[in-house]
Length: 266
View 1 (tube, rainbow, N blue to C red):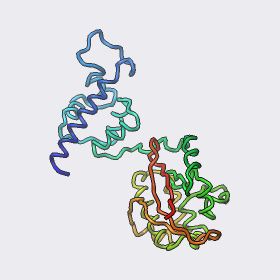
View 2 (view 1 turned 180 degrees about the vertical axis):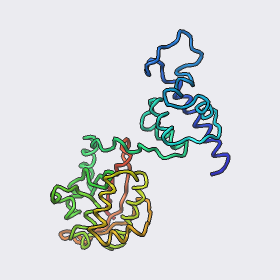
View 3 (view 1 turned 90 degrees about the vertical axis):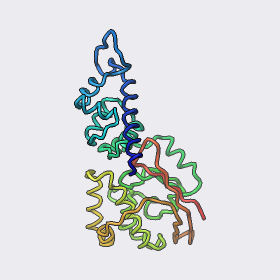
């Protein structure tokens, strides 16, 4: 990163946390306000104490100096500043650090309006959660994905996209160029997992697939990494014959780990 860009990020980080500090009232964090305060909001020493930081070190951050800021320190600072999801994400982006709590709270369930929106889409559409299990889908997606979305999962298992691709008997005949698509999905999933390396549920899913599917195990060991992108998706449907779609994927605002995928007929 260019030196000018680094300096600009440091200045913006300092300006941002100062602006947030000035918005936090002493009463909101349990401090008795003094009769006269020279600055609005919290003093630097007050915020530093709330975040478990030294006043000097915190002051240097506000001043845009070249100081090392750990993710855990940023997390404490975010909590002390009462940052919301967007503000917290902005803080970590400016600092160039990964949020250790990224995605926490994204499994609280989808808003009812999201399910209603998906149902209103005329082409196949579905929502995947952090583990790439389907949380919502419309009738068009249910008809298209035979063996995945059209029937209850076996043994209470979730409708997981990876389990379908690698373990369902009909996936190879439904998905055109199965090996190419499967290899890409594995690489996309590995890139997705990079922000959740400590998630036990993801580790259990990966271990299960490696044991149950030699193909998955081989593809996983290649360490391929790809972003989840659009492009043509083709199927040999048992009832509707050959089908071609253009895939478009969106992230759901307020749910960083939730992905909405829409398949538009070509």
